[in-house]
Length: 289
Image 1 (cartoon, rainbow, N blue to C red):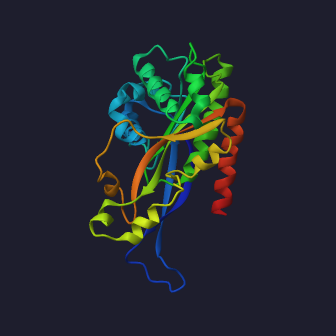
Image 2: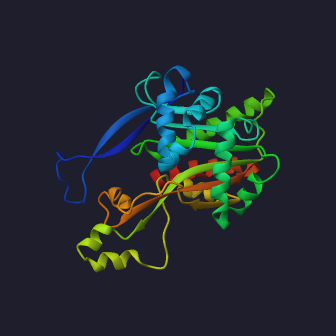
Image 3: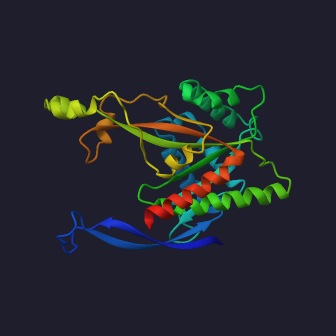
């Protein structure tokens, strides 16, 4: 059963659209109806695991994502998927939360905690997270796992967060273990770096453009910028798996510079989480208005 339904107009580049002299680009508007569902074990293993692989990027092989997917599907009344062709299709987006304290004795969660602890230790900005994960007993941290396909609009995200808050409240009324002290959201970012392709053809203007003192962090998902304003701490970290020197150029697309993907952790104290979710909704409503 779908949790909710909503329609969203998604801009899609069109090559056969009549040109408009008042615009630099032409767009087709593709009207897509998104549906929100509970995670469904019989349909969603492949889709959620694929999105987790996208979230953890080149470090995905270091973690047991099959077991993590099974755990997400084992709590079907908590979290959501977004689909466009009915419940028996792969998810275009998902959001769920895992209680690290409750599941710390599971080998794959212990492995994930150690991975996150190592990443927190690598960035002083994540000192508060490092302190929490270094305690003798892992606190009741809700690990928020969420990802979506690249062309899925951000407008699908606020309903999933809003429903998650409602579902956690219902679970607490049933004495289930979701009384979190903090929420930890993992996301992906990137920075632009000098391209090796440019170096090969000696284009110093482009190299100079990339060699400034300030490295700007770019966000794949706009809601992450909103969430970090409410964070106890947040910061990025490099992947453990090293890529060859040309990897950034493979992600270059239409940009002059190469792209270096990174991951980011955002730690929010539980009392501030609802305010952060409301801020996402307000931001996207203002931006689309």
